[in-house]
Amino acid sequence: MSTVCPSCGHRNADGAEFCQSCNAYLNWNPTIAEPLQAKAAPRTAPADPPTMSSGPLNLDALPRPGQPPPAANPVPPAGPDVYDHAPAAPAPPQPPPRQSGAADHPAPARLDPPAVYEPPAPARTIPWLWIGLAAAVVMIAAAAVTYVLIFGLPWVQPPPDSAGRGTLAPGQATAVISDARITAKSKIFLTPNSTGPGNPQAKGLRVAQIQDGGMVVTTLDGRPADVDQALPFDYLAINHEEGRLGAGRYVSGTAVLDAFTASADVPAQATAGDSAILLGVGAGPAPAAPLEISSRSPGVSFAVSTSGLQPHPAELRFHWLVVNRAGEGGGEFRIMMSASRVEPGQSTATLAVPQAASPWVLLTTDHSRREGQEGQETGAHPGVFTIQAEDGKVVVSTMDRGPAPTAGAPFGWLVLWPRAEATPS
Image (cartoon, rainbow, N blue to C red; front, top):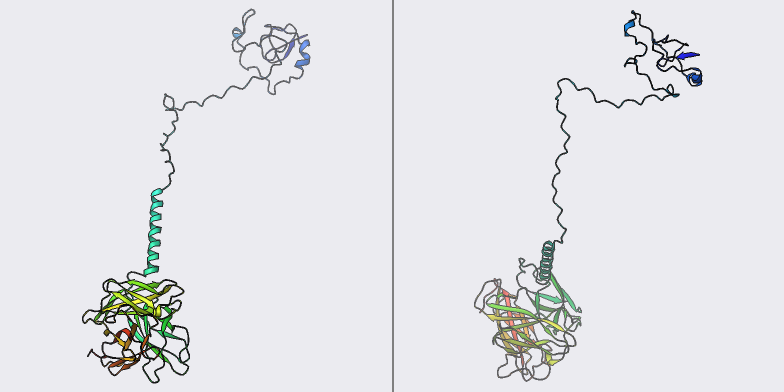
């Protein structure tokens, strides 16, 4: 048998007190090696076994029998597994050594930055104020557009009034008039003027179409003029509600003759006993008969009817113009106006006018100024037209060139001429 050193595992001879390899004391708990051979066999000697010190041995430092071993070499606990224990667990990591000069107090704890206060988001509301403002702007814009479409731009003034002469070519029922002063809103008044050789029989006239810069004139019944003679006519284009024509001041407007009626009352406070009133049929259906003035109430109104009081089958729009003397005024025209008639049994009447080279004559059948009579008699009344307007006189004839009836053929008239050509005589 041999004694195994508990310190280095060296096998020593039986009875040895100190290990021959490491000088460890062997008598603490002697253990027989034979029962542990199976477990001690796998152990291998250390690669570099400890060596004895080369210095002198201090026998006084060695333990004596019966004394405990030195504290530097503790003896593991006895038992069968004393040499088969697992390696010790590694020691926990130690903090790094404190450097010289470091403060003795611990480092301050890390503080997070203070949180920034964020107020809560306001509740989402409907911007009623902005919606109301937008709606108001849209309504104002719509009203402005409507006003412009109806009345035109307020800062754009209509052109001056215009007068002129056109001609229906032989065998034609329409004539195109180009005039820069004519607009789509002009009120047009027409009178046939057959001044010239042949004096063709006149027909009533009306406006078939009108636009900025011109208009189309046609016969009242749509039939063409004589195939062998042209039919001249005079026109007056009024572009204002109120204005002046030379020595006269006028008021103009538009009225409606309802369907299946023969007369209409036109409110016009400017109506006077000696006012010259003109009528003109605008674009639309042709009237059943020529229009005429049937009566007037000065300062209130005047009445318009179809000749012979023939009911009109559809609504008829017509223009009217009331001219009153107002003293000499400016402008490019000079005017004369009055009322007259073709005497009973006669076919013509003569008017004295200034020696103008080519005056424009506008006529309207007017029964409201017959002296001693009111209203119109039953039956159609002949219209009138101009057959001569030169050499200081205007000759007016009945439309059919026949004699006037017993009541005559009364008419109101307005004569215009350029201011530079002549003065009233």
